[in-house]
Amino acid sequence: MKKLIVLLLVFALVFGAVGCGAHVEQTEAEKVTVVLDWTPNTNHTGIFVAQAKGYFEEAGLAVEVVQPPEDGAVTLVASGKAQFGVSFQDSLAPAFVGENAMPVTAVAAVIQHNTSGIVSRAGEGMDTPKGLEGKKYATWDLDVEKETIRDVMTADGGDFDQVELIPSTVTDEVSALQSGSVDAIWIFYGWAGVACEVAGLETDYFEFADIDPVFDYYTPVIIGGNAWMEEHPEAAKAFVAALSKGYTYAAEHPEEAADILMEAAPELKANRELVYASQKYLAAEYIADAKRWGEFDPERWAAFFNWLNEKELLEERIDPDHGYTNAYLPE
Image 1 (cartoon, rainbow, N blue to C red):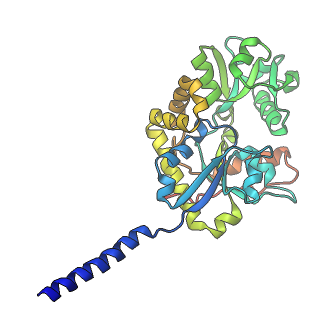
Image 2: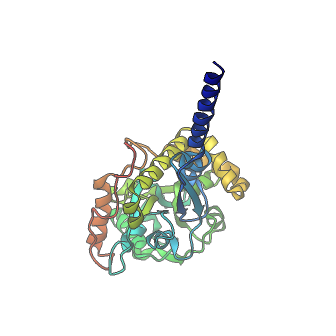
């Protein structure tokens, strides 16, 4: 009996050690770098939520979030120095054509619809595109930007050539409008438009997508490096799935998500009211009318690229179906 007890103890120790060893041994996490398009803001909240909530870690990923270099997120992702990044369909278009076309693909839409448009001081006649005639518009002097405004003005019976183009140095839309240095600014409503509301500045605003559906393109988007995603398809899917959880959480819990964003980027705490208000606004935009976060509508993607081709705004024609995929999104 004593020998039997000793044998049982030995077996227990051996198998217990093996069991413990199984828990200790873990697969090394896949390292992933995500490069933002700008300083941290509410467009990026889902990334920081996924990081803070452990969604990336659960997916076997060690994710580092970095801010963009001078040559931008697309170049960094295309070169393989980052695996994912934040960009925009309109700025991706020129990167997809020519001899030096960038090997990147949009894998998820951060928000479903283009919420950009023109903001101006209220009551000064710029509530429609025609009203920009004779007014000072802060321009980035980009061909796509100017052709977009020309298009919507023409549709409204206006003349783009009558707009006074002021080279943009705007870093604070509220101050720029209040000072009168410019009359109209192209903004993304989720941040700058909400900032005007929080500041109590009365504004007029029109959205490009409301005027012509061709401008309901995807901005911003998550891009991935083609070579890395082809070599690591499961890790790429795991990353996008974790990101989907992060943005879905932000959509359902905007205040808590805003807190997570500000913990990750403490400099935003100086604008706490704006962050909360912006996060609440975007909570309804992340998924909106799509069946899942991140989904691309092929017709909407192609419509904008077809418009670029029609206006001959790129150095060569672009395949309207190029540059995006829904294949990495979770079912």
